[in-house]
Image 1 (tube, helix red, strand yellow):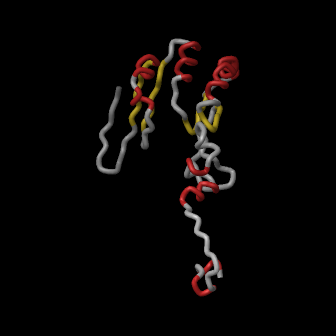
Image 2 (tube, one colour):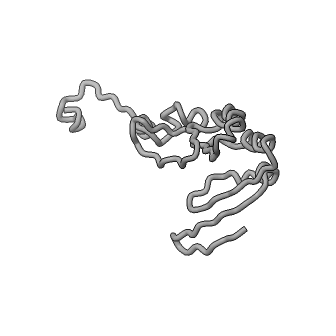
Image 3 (cartoon, helix red, strand yellow):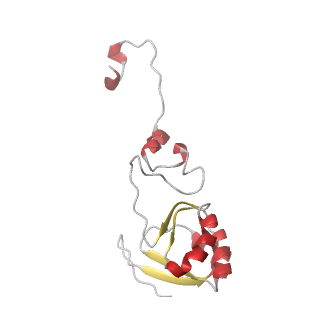
Length: 147
């Protein structure tokens, strides 16, 4: 394990390594980290890789870095990963998120389908709205955009 010094709001990158058994026993290793940090989890083979994938919490994205020879293993992992994440990628890195019609939160239900459980995508604005009905109000009392 190699660590770097961080000062104030400047964070230097850190890369850590563990094995699947340790990862699955320590919930903190799977927590989200904001900043330049990587965790490599080493597995002994395909069976342990599938066990590891089954142990994942819900994620926004899952990425498979693979070549053609890994297709069989990827096919085995797909049914597991598509229940864990809202976006699956191969040999790439997920984009950031923005408020756009084509963007969804991803992740397990309800985040991917319920605007009340996400802050990503155009429907997310509903999460922060409180409807108000104006009945029989004269125009002078209505909000400007309703006049």
